[in-house]
Length: 288
Image 1 (cartoon, rainbow, N blue to C red):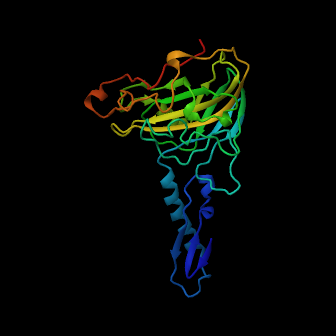
Image 2: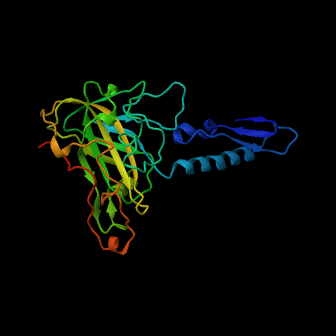
Image 3: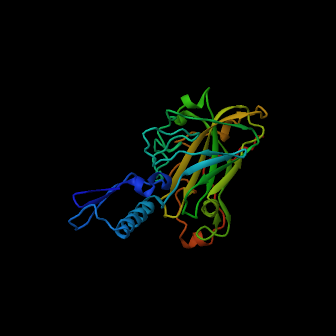
């Protein structure tokens, strides 16, 4: 924070931009004073508070996975608004923002990125049968399903483009109870706990995999919002099994915008009397 030409210059670091996960925005606040260095603490911190509130509101509408808990160890996720010149190291694949993907044919649909690993990509080693908890720092949409997928890589996952892999679903939570507009949903539980836990099938063959957590927000009629993020895993142990046939899908390609669980208006009279919902995608593979 500094002054220039009777203006207070506030940079993102002055409002802890990195820890808040907010865009790289600066501001200048004019002060009509002859001595530009003579700022009162009240004015400075009032200005900071206003700017901080604005910046936080810009990022708070949506969300993305920010960390993982695997076997009792917490792994820092990718920070999409961190523009540190030293770069980032994470098990999570890079993604650019908390904004939704609005089309199932979008080229970023697999992992909310261009399909590539980061320049300093990490992987977490985990035994088959272990629970993995994804965590969000914020989530505000109560209606919609949660889905978790995995995809086996050819060799090192770091050299694999996520768009070329075959994915299988290991967990899903759709409409748990109640009706479509007012019931309890998987994303509603994420909104309450900011976390979702899924277990790697104990029978899964050892190897390198991507894991993909996807939230589908249905709060806007016939305008689904998709929020996928991926991380790299090295699975050990297991029973040597892999899914095949109808369990395998590609992203993009697994969904259609006309699917009943995708193209949906949860606010109609019919929806108010509907207590079932078909989660998009293939059936869950449990290792059988």
